[in-house]
Image (cartoon, rainbow, N blue to C red; front, side, top):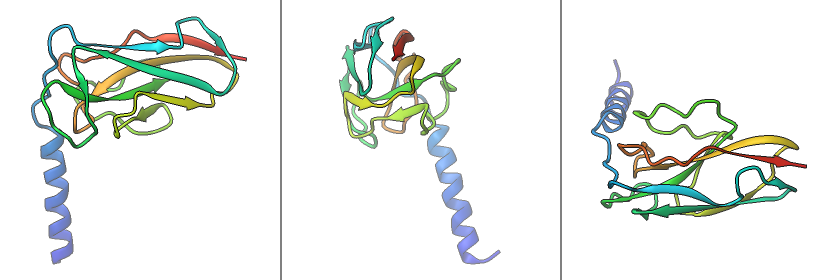
Length: 140
C-alpha cells in the first residue's frame, strides 16, 4: 500500500467517525415550518418557498453552535431520509448550508410534496428531529 492510499484510508475513516458521532440535541419544542406556500396551494413557476424556525437559530453548515442548524428542503420524497445519517444532497434533498431561509425554484407542472428538515453543522438531523409537516402544492 503506497502513502497516497494510506492517507486516503485514514481520511475515509475520519469521515466515518465524524458522521457516526453523537447526534446534536434539539431543544424541547423546536419547530421548523413553512411560512409559504401553504398546504394545498396552487402555484405558477417560479415557486418561492420561505422557511420558518422557532426555538432554535440558523447557522451555516460547519458552524457548531448550540441550538442552531440549517435548513434542508425535501421534495417529492415518500419517506424522509435516514434520521441517523447526514442528509443526502441531490435534487430531492436541497441543502441551505449558508443559512438561507428561502428559495425561488422551478418545479415541474403537477403535484409536489415539500417538507423541511433541520440539519446540524454536519448536515445530520438533530435528535429529536426538527422536521415540518409534509405539505402538498400543485404547480400549473
